Amino acid sequence: MEVPRKDGVRRSDLLGSTTDVVVVGAGVAGSALAYALGKDGWNVHVIERDLTEPNRIAGEILQPGGYDKLIELGLEDCVEGIDAKRVLSLAAIYKDGKKAIVPYPSDVSARGFHNGRFIQKLRGKAASLRNVELEQGTVTALIEEKGTIKGVQYKTKTGQELAASAPLTIVCDGCFSNLRRFLSNPKIEIPSYFIGLVLENSHLPHVNRGYFILKDTTVVAFPIGTNELRCLVDFPGQKAPSISNGEMADYLKTVVAPQMPAELFDAFICAIDKGNIRTMPNRIMPMSHYPIPGAFMMGDALNMRHPLTGGGMTVALSDVVLLRDLLRPLNHLSDAAALCKYLESFSILRKPMATTINTVAGALHTVFSPSEDPLRKEMRQACFDYFCLGGVFSNGLMSLLSGMNPDPLSLVFHCLALAVYTVGRLLLPFPTPKRIWIGTKLILVALGIFLPIIKAEGIRATFFPVTMLAYYRTPPVH
Image 1 (cartoon, rainbow, N blue to C red):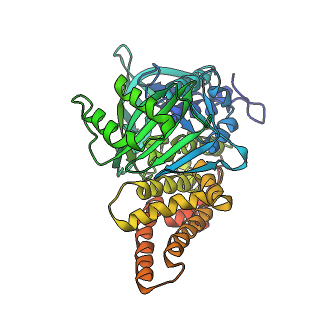
Image 2 (image 1 turned 90 degrees about the vertical axis):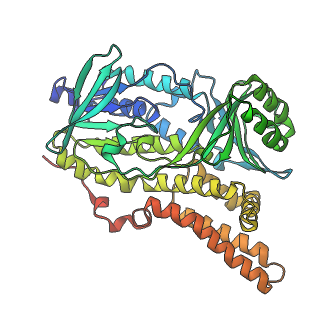
Image 3 (image 1 turned 180 degrees about the vertical axis):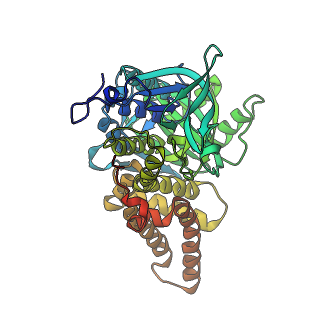
């Protein structure tokens, strides 16, 4: 049911039965946002292209920081009853036969599950509120009037063309968003593909642990159900091997299978033989939205990072909490221009969580991608050894990766510490001129990896937010 405001008056009582917010898309971000805004008393109309259970190979691990946001939204029960599994750590990081155990800090854990089951639970929670309407339909256009978005046009499941009007339209229609181009200047990069398989009945020495396997390719595996592991092979390049002509199965058996740990090998081969292999392009897209009155973007429609570290849902849920809190002081959303100016602070306030997770994901993917460059190989080995150090080093990286410590300064510290550690390995025991020269080139390579990612996130907004006017936006007073 609706939650009244602190003054005891429901927003719907003030505004009648009109819609306050139209949400386009009912994925993780859209469903969680609809529930959060509905609980705060806003009237929400959610339009989703397909309300049947999704079947994806991504969005199946929720990092500890994201689970904390789920609790903050009152949605923690959405991981119950779907055979979700606790992921206690990256139990094993394998490289050339060596293994490191890297737990999450402070005894927290991630959650692994089937993406579609999780989304259906989120949709059910949103639809349980009487002031949230969840409808199946395909949004075809934004309704614009004098430079302000007034709602959307959409086709219902039966093909009927309708319009939904609201003072605020929030686009959450995912990585394939067809509305993104009207609200932003997207620059999408596809550096690799994920090849997804489900490994069944694996007898693992580490229960409820994730695997991070580094050799000729990068492979991640984690539990998503009873006796089920999601296995994702990161294939670099713009085109994945063909599944239909057997090229994919041959690649997995000849290139990937030999690097798999013994406890996963049989299940991996069995999954290939079953033939249920799927691929997904991995997209990277920095946030670049236009401030348009009456419209807003969230989730993968707004910002994407490489999914290697599974941070997408954590960023999305963090953004939902932030937007909910920004809208809470308002009595209505009818002043589109004032609301647009006020919500400019969103892009600044989201930076700590988004930047740290985006940067770690992008940097680790680049470092761990296979390369014949000896400098890149040295960095890869140094990064693996850095994880093996334990203590503040591995805990610090895991805190950033998991969203438990979204602190850009901590990110800088670990970038510098990793660079010093990498160069120090070369200079010891005797810093010869050749080693110094190689160390210098390594620093330049490292800067070439980290700086473009951080620049795309926005250096000023990330590290010096107090110098930006949007940081000081206050709720419009009427």
